[in-house]
Amino acid sequence: MGTVGGLTVLHPLAKRTLEVLGNPSARELMSIIASVGLAQNFAAVRSLVTTGIQQGHMKLHLLNILNHLGANETETTAAQTFLKKKPFPTLPSPFFWRAGAKRPKYRKEWSWR
Picture 1 (cartoon, helix red, strand yellow):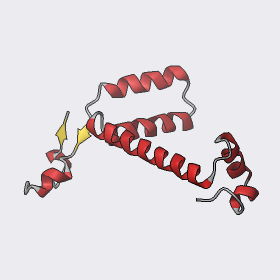
Picture 2 (spheres, rainbow, N blue to C red):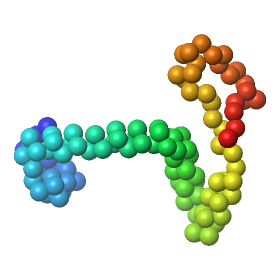
Picture 3 (tube, rainbow, N blue to C red):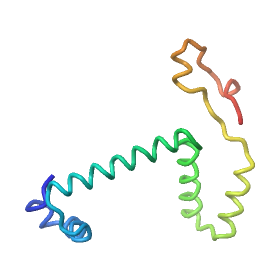
């Protein structure tokens, strides 16, 4: 990691980012980047043990689609409420497959919550 020369001087966003961070030294910048990476890892683990990454990812897709379609706040809330009542399809975990269980071949073999 470097904080002098290259894109840090040429690219306005890189320059501004370093200013917002208080113009850290290369060593401090590496610590910041490592901390952000660890925070992302903890967030991923939390998601895996709670709602699951796919469910949160699909919610993000829904919001992007509704935004693209120009849905207002009332329509967005109505769509989210409607879809919360629907079952969420899940496949057995790949760890379960490694244990020797038969992999599902068709959608009718998927489980539904």
